[in-house]
Image (cartoon, rainbow, N blue to C red; front, side, top):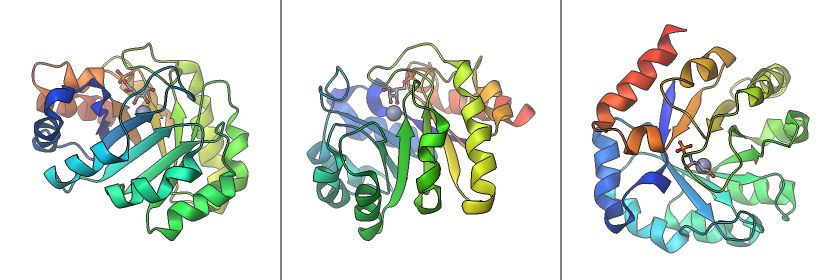
Length: 218
Ligand code: DX5
Ligand code: ZN
């Protein structure tokens, strides 16, 4: 299992150091939650902030856009140094155009689905994607409870991608902790985002090790 700590739970007054701390804790990706206060009822940070923290690590930046018009901002996030850009299928931008734009920048593209969105919505785009991100909480805030009833979406998408894109990765986001990561692993998830469970742990390195160990057991 790959672990992507969500910087949403970091100390924003020292983001650079927090990124270094996650690199030392052996994070596989840095998960960066961009919220516009419109698509979701919360505001975080945008491309200028991501640009300033880019130089702190070579660990890939997994940028999760919770914004209404992702297509308008792909250039900005590309020049800020995103390695993966995931955006919501429920957003207002043209989906295919946005995927194509991300890929034209040499960045890996991902689609995200909210809890009420069926897995089948992403089927038409699977062949063009690096990952599908399945929300296991309503997007907007960290520290919410894991929705285990989202896990059947993992096998639905995996099954469909077998023929269309066998290398497609599945990521889940929200409520991942020691008591939930086993279920995600069992369902076939490749990458788990974890905010609270990693940042609020006394020892983030041990927290990541433990999460991976639990996932490996199933
Ligand atoms: C929610 C964000 C998540 C969130 C996860 O909208 O996309 O990345 O920070 O936080 P935890 O792990 O605390 O649920
Ligand atoms: Zn996220």
